[in-house]
Image (cartoon, rainbow, N blue to C red):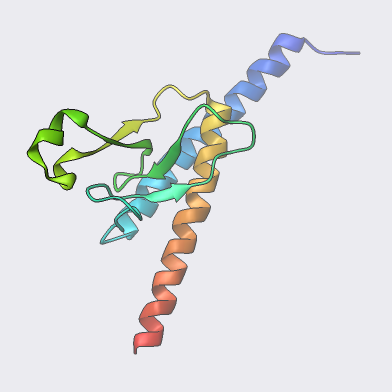
Length: 133
């Protein structure tokens, strides 16, 4: 005897959505524990912890966990309109674009990696603090 395939899919979708919601809440809590939040390496103006992309997601560039617990694509470029100023720092532009609208399954994959990256950051920071004592 088989069940309704649409019910199986609906149940699976609900499970993934619940996992996404729980991971979103966990990331907010985890981000609050990271104080001060680290500047992103190589960035002049942005803070964040890099999140490795799940396999097969080549659409996005560098994804970071922000200090608010949200996920962003970090975009860095040079603003050629600022070239006449002669100041290379004025030419540099950075922007964090929210990863809004990710399908729940893809969000779960990114969020799990973000939890791992943030946890590793906290562990390294604790080890460094212990070594300084």
